[in-house]
Length: 309
Image (cartoon, rainbow, N blue to C red):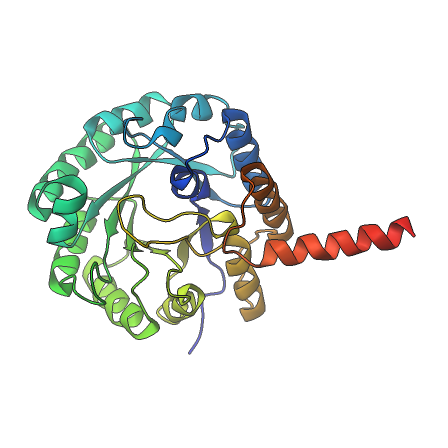
């Protein structure tokens, strides 16, 4: 089965990864990390979420981060908005793309947002219209597509209907999230193909968590379906503060290593990402699940010892 010649990665670490950390990451460090990811060749970076700092204190400086972003023509900076006020803040911060996100599993929607899926869809429709009125590109994201409490317990027909609906509204792309890390390759293929049949030419993005160690296997399954866009996170940072047990996203540098080995182009320098991952580990004083950045550190440490000799 043929694979895409190239894929596009979006590093969500500065949002999905950082928001999971209790220790506040200084604004300058956030901007330095985003700059390093841009220098590594990431064409898309999710830089912040515009949520109330009472619920996600790490994102209290979202506007300050956006104000300090390096101006680049080769990078799209995006921000996550979960309600109308967040959407307005993202626009006022000068971003050109906003990422929206709603649940596809009714119980998760009630647990996470205290509303039904139908109510979430109605709110998102209004947000899409507002974004289009203000010339913002919209990526519509669906949470828990592959299951909430158990693999596949999110109704596939509901996911397909929602995907078709928002594709018809003219969103720039649709993102399917394995928020709980319950997906496996067969489920990836079944659900991706069902959604692809419903949305036509609208680009499809996969947002995969590595909770059960199948993240990169799921990437390979999605590639076989022709998926050409993936969310990743430096060092494998991330999780979800509202889902017990949800761990990090697939690591950017590990994903690039896989894709390089498969001959799939990304134009991303995994060593530059790896160094950024090592720096953020040092700042936070902890290790993240990604693997390649630690191998890079060991190799560079060994080279330094040899040079000293």
